[in-house]
Image 1 (cartoon, rainbow, N blue to C red):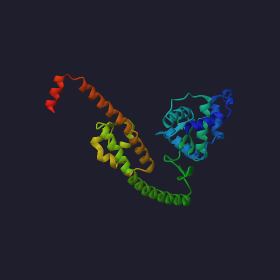
Image 2: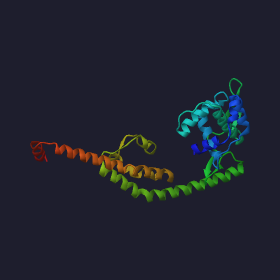
Image 3: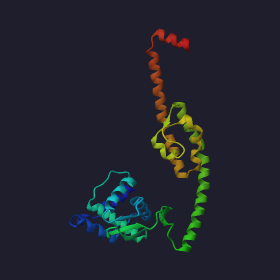
Amino acid sequence: MARWRKRLYEQRDYSHLSKTPAPEVLEKAIAACAFKGGPRWEHYVNRDLLALFGELQIVSIADVVERYLDMLVVTRNQKREQATPFNYERTGNLVGWGLRLNLLEEVLDEAGGRAWRLVDRELRWDVHKGKSRQVRGLPAGEQAAMDRKRATERKRAETFARKHAEKIAPEIKADFDSILKEDPETVLGDKFAAFLAPYFTPPLAVHAAYGALLELHYSWPKEKQQLWKSSIKREVFPAFCRGSERLKAQREEVEAMTDDDAAALEDLI
């Protein structure tokens, strides 16, 4: 999604940016809100602003571009970009939309300069049926109706997730059994940390937590269950390879034995 949004940005003409001072680019972009990308745009704006602010109460205009570039590293899992006119424009567009959607309030920083404060430190926009939907900050009557609707959706999702957990449990068990059969010493590493927390910390030996691992997914939403199931399935083949390598090494070790060594081993067995 990030690459798609960047391509949309790049399709526009930015030649004028090189002729405009960066602070002016930022100010104009805040006022214009010229770019909007797709039906989930409001949710993305909300999410990115929460990441940009982090624990800060306010962000000043002097710091906002650098904060924006830091946010991209965290949310897009990419290398840090430079503070180019292009990124001044992108930063201003985000701030402008934050103001337009009442996610930001304009304030003054300690030096009396222009700054912004987050109005709400929780998401006001989620994604429902592929589109952004405002779920917080609504007028009282609308907010009450939305709260009831979301409570119903949560109950329905929890019921569906429990049924899905039961459905995929045999497949998860079969994959873990295959893994332990091929490589009894299999360990789940750091890439499983988000699944194992808060109960376990990698590295975790599968055989040591076998029972708990089979039950882990029952409290998760369907999406996380699916990711877990896929992640475990991908470990079956590597376990097979490790097991094959171990058997090969054992055969080579036996073949390298002298007749006396082999006889001594037979006596021990």
